[in-house]
Image 1 (spheres, rainbow, N blue to C red):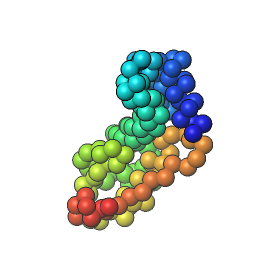
Image 2 (cartoon, rainbow, N blue to C red; image 1 turned 90 degrees about the horizontal axis):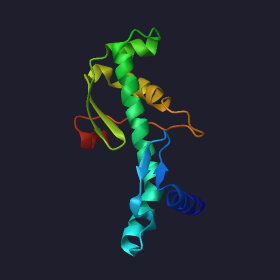
Image 3 (tube, helix red, strand yellow; image 1 turned 90 degrees about the vertical axis):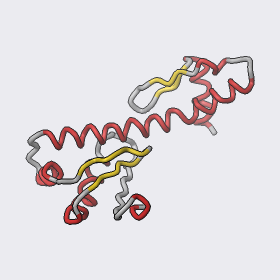
Length: 140
């Protein structure tokens, strides 16, 4: 409750809220006299920093993966990911979907959480789960 009230108050004072990486989400209706518009902006003031920070972290993971795949890092795990045949197909909310040869699945399950879990310096550990299957449904 304290978090929610603090975010709404900060949005009223500044007109925006920020994600973990400082990206601003402007909320022009936060001071609207129209109750419905104001309520929507207040909900956004609560949700946007969380959802936006989630988006920031997944983008950092994709950037880190891209850098790794195109550079010459010498760490053994970096080499494994760099030389993998796996391909990033798409991002769906807080998930990255890869297509990979069966023989790379166990390596990816071991190495991707290390890479993705270390992209943001947070006060709590960043949990990364990996699922696999012949299709997206099986991977969940």
